[in-house]
Length: 264
Length: 155
Image (tube, rainbow over all chains, first blue to last red; front, side, top):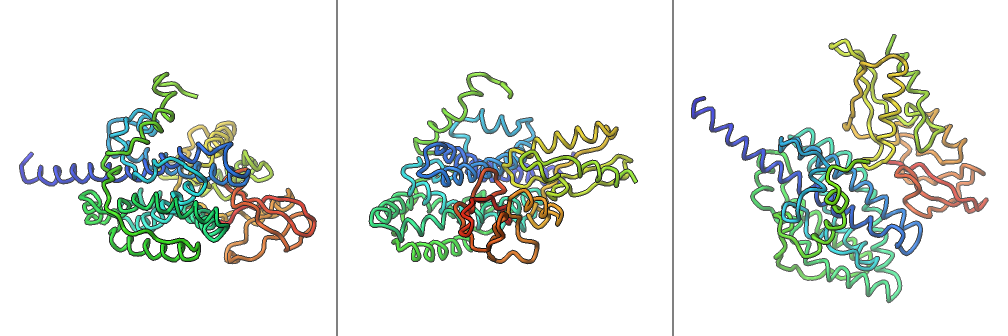
């Protein structure tokens, strides 16, 4: 093969690697958040919210399955959704740092959900026009579910924020404590830029502006205060995580690690 | 010919979670067609990405095809366009209502109109939870007859 035809192939490989990492970021964010929501089962403040959080988690894990299956195909090394979910270690997970934060109280869970729902709406909306038709199909499917999730999380944000003095102060505390993770949501790195240049993923700058306006409007209705922007030393999507992810994986992967290859 | 027969066959496969509905009523069977390879291709789409019934629907569909002698029929998962409750057939809506589940609004009437009580017909109802016992349902209560009921979510 001539050098001239090898060059594009090398470029394609680089693009393929970037696509793999990009899809894993989406997949892992959904999977890790879905696992977190599962921790609420049997513990939520009311039966209806228990069902709600479990339903959200189920959708997120469903989205993660479609994305992980696709990631396995892009990688081309024969790893399926289970191998990717259960047999990777924390530094190989590329989820947003926000997704792995502990549940805390109900207000923390709602604020984390509201932030990620709003982020997913922007990302999935952009992806429905992706040059990658597989990703576009998954995004269109996930977007419908995410809009429903956002209705739930936004509804609770307003009820808690514009609620009693106690619910308002705890929700404000949750916003204050989780806000530092939001800078990572729209901070584009070379993978995001490569994906945007290839027409695969949306430009994050425009999405960030829409997200910011949505935050302002929701916080205003919830009578909550938007914290000042903070620098972000968080790099979950590059595989550098807070201490919480390892513990979450320890529980999530326990069965597959203890009994390798076990099946239902 | 075989296509019509397969549609009729699948119209007898119940949804595992709401068995009064068939998978055809639910709108998840997207196509049945004889392709250029000479085989029957059957496209099935999931309702929700995480719906646990998806695997059960797939295996029930496979069994129904096999039992009817269509062993070489190809079962395909279709993601795009995504399923919408608009695809629940008029017959499916009637079956849901008769079963006590308020059906989703018909296509085009989505808006935020009131959800009618499937028991007494009252339009004075209240949503208890956006979610219910399956991903496709939400929880309501009727303010007139006071009965709680499920509403098949519009999505």
